[in-house]
Structure formats: structure tokens, C-alpha cells
Image (cartoon, rainbow, N blue to C red):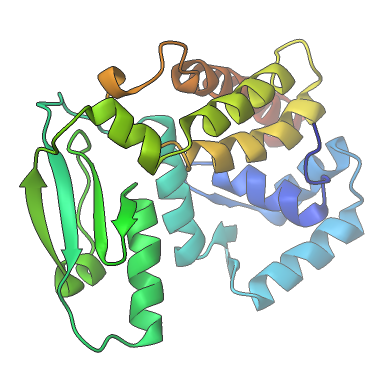
Length: 242
């Protein structure tokens, strides 16, 4: 199973995305890079480039994620501990009602629908089980009407048509094996970014609509264990070096 290589940018980004608040002094980020074999100069060049690209903001207290990446961190946090509610069998049905939308508006709406974990049934019609608690962004309320529906037929079959559950489950199994606690922290650090990206694609369906061996909970628990190990590592080797 192949993963993206551990670059200076990925070291900085993964470290800050896992920090709350997402801000660290440069010297701490340099230490993290060195512990993963990335030279100080390489980290500092990456920091400068990330500021120029709008990924980071430099302050008197160090480097912090930009607003755009704070939004990504919030989405990742939600994917790790989703806000769900008991499912009554109802589905959210969202229909595009706006006319003559600009290309940018259509693109923003599509991204918002993905963030809300809605699936597209057909052009302009999106739906999912009504088991999540999350705010509705303005781009959705401005362009769409929101309904509650109860589809005919087997809801599990509908869910399987809307989401490729087998593919998600297979990838999650591969990631779970790669994130094994017996692997080195550096190897798990590389895998952790892929885990977070994958969790963002979890449709977060209610249990009655999922296969019996759904690995979402296991993968979240493994990531939580990695994050605890990494935070301990940061405190011991970076924040309080001795």
C-alpha cells in the first residue's frame, strides 16, 4: 500500500492539523522535522512557502493555520468524532432551486454538499439519512430547498447505490493494518494523513444501513490511539526537550 512521501510541508501541515490550537513556534516545527529526518533548512523554506501560498499565517507566537485550513481541521475533527443523532428512518432531501448560477456558485455548492456528506441522486438533487447534526452553510440555504423524505424500497439498498461502501471498507481495512501500533511512529505519522483523508469520505450512515463488519469505528479508535502517542511524543521530545 503506497502513501504520499513525508515531505517538509506534510510534516508541518500534519503537525499543525493535529494541534489544538493549530499554532506552534518555528523551533518546535523544526524539531519535529528533524525527528523525522527533515533538515532544519528544509522546514524553514517550507514554512516561508506555506505563508506565501496562504496555508499558514506567521504571528509573533509562531506559525498558525490559515482560516481555510482551520476549516479543514474542523472537518477532520468532526470526521473523527461525528455529531450524530438517533435515526428515525427519515432522509434529508436537498433540491437546487436557484436559477442561472455562476460556475463559482455551482462549485461552492458541490463542495458544501460533500462537506455535509450528501450524495447526488441526480443533477440538482441530493440526499442522505437524517442522522447528522451540523449547520447548513449559507451557500446551501441560498441555492436550495431542504425537505424531509422517506424513500420507497429498502433504504440499505438505496445507500449502497449512493455510496461505494465496499470500496470505502476495503480501503479502511488497508489503512487499519498500516496504522498498527507495532509500526514505528514515523510510519504511522505518514499513514495518519491518509486516514484523516479517508475519514472525510465516510458517509456516516446509521448502523442499519451499514454492512455488519463496517470498519469506521475501529479506524477512528486506532487514529485516536496514534494521536495520543504523537501528542506524548511532542511533549517529551519537542515541547519539553531534555
